Length: 423
Image 1 (tube, rainbow, N blue to C red):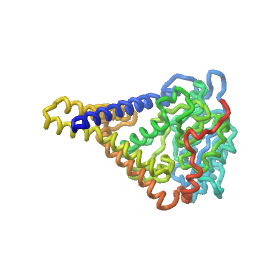
Image 2: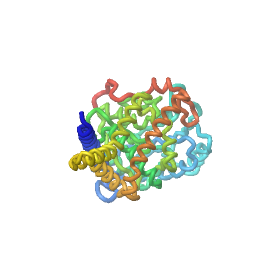
Image 3: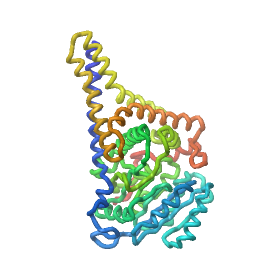
């Protein structure tokens, strides 16, 4: 095969790959509506606190907190300010050492609010991750027909948010609502890194077909995971997730596999949750759970790395190589064909950057230019997570060490032949 044929085949392959990748990603993004619009917080839908059928079902918010002294008071205060008749707020303090426990006890004493329940986890049973056990304890205590799992540093902006979210779920007959939080303020590189991570997340969750309600794919988000109690009990609660660091994400997968109707929404301006400060800190923050996304398999990580590098940098390489060969052989058509994958890549990346800039601010052009650097940073974070996990023989999370053998044994695999009752 001649050099010209190789370049032509490479360009055609990359063009097809970006056409498929971009189309699936574009479809996935279109499936994630703005929560403020879908829930009527810009006006419409239903009045806060009631649906078209009458009073809203009871809701239990389970907040898990470990050393959240800086944020926990705001989180709890915002929850107690919600206008929701059947609300209970259960805060599970997971062995905090920074004053979180004292803040919660003070809030309970000062507010004298019967809706607020504080649970102090003093010990961690063997075979459980701390956060998973905290979710389990909170769900055991919960009495609501809906359960909202919320991280300890999440701030709900609107006082009607929970009423509107449950109304939305009831109106659309959903079983699980997950909300992407507003993570601002972020640096340009951090915003680009979040964008690349979100792409990987959306494709892995098969969000592009979520509206078809098939029993595959699915995802959850720790900042806002709201699930119908009957659907949660059907999968066995957090029992299968007790040793999986990606418990929030995997909760959504289990629900989807069980037949639960699931939707993701963008919580920009409504659900605030800072995700570290700076791109490098985001990469370090992914150390504990990014390797689990590859089932603790170095081989899977190698394959993903190779695919990402070819997909992101291949179009530019094909364009340069095609230009050199086209000039040498006097074939301008080869030059044009070689740059087609790069043009398609720029189109899709630019389109995604414009949407992100519209919702979260910043420069779409700058986000597009930072895209390759963000991909390299995410790959570096994945390898950092893998190598450190292997070198240590496990993961240290929330000041507790979990052996790799136990994590591998407790991981939840997608489509593992689980059987659930029909919803």
